[in-house]
Image: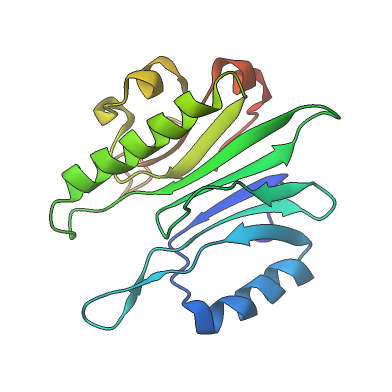
Length: 178
């Protein structure tokens, strides 16, 4: 992923705890990326799960927004023009192996909806491993937004679980998804 030619890279489920995150941040920096990271959660079994990162090519102004980011959602901003920033949301949804995953994914969607609504007309894009197809998006604002994906299955070649959603003002700026 660090060899990608994109300008902004969203990573979900890096599975790095506070003790190992710095190593990954150094690797990303050496490959030409700066970014904002969240620490993965420790599971009840002692493992790690989650953790997201939003990376931008060095020189691209990117910063953490002043909200409570967590291992499943990260809100950052990128300087778009001299006077305009746009928000970049990074989501890692709960999969079927997590109890109450559908309810928890709805909570993530509600959180995202609140952030997008609060931001008003600020342009935004949200990408992630949603662990649910676009047709299951329940948020009113998200259903009206533009969904960007390759139309191909991203999980076992069948289900579309990884995609981007953007505000109308950024739709023409999204040039591709991996």
